Length: 201
Image (cartoon, rainbow, N blue to C red; front, side, top):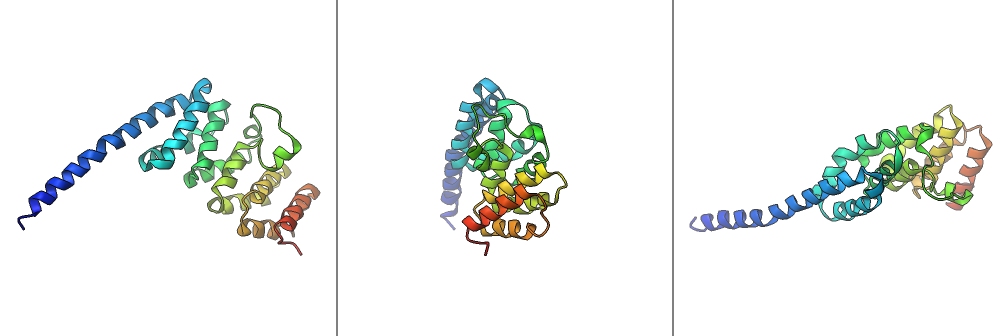
């Protein structure tokens, strides 16, 4: 076992070599996160956080622990960017909060610039809905439940999210809902999506 000390020393050297890099990533992430909260700096900070979290697991975990609480109350540019990050990074832990936001009329809109009719169909005016669609199938169950909501606006947003998932399971959820859906707008959108995705007969 003469080689054991060398193995231990080698492991320590490797450990010591990557630990400063991780610490640097976390330091940069913490700094960018604080800037994310300031509307004037939020856009650039969001871009930095996205790039860092996609390549560094510790940075992603930092955001997983914080973003779900941050997005609970719609407010300003910082909120929009935080919601977008949950979708871009596919943060499943944010799904319950994002789904609850579909019932909050104040969580829709708020993006800069005019939104067209076509933009609405791709959730360009609905950050929470877009994030759920980007997360995809892990969000499916939470969104499908909202198809039973008595509020037509909530059902409409839920249908748009499922239609934007581009998933056969999302399409099946929309198809199941047809038997119960009474609103013509939701039914029409559902049939159009299913036809486009070649589900409807």
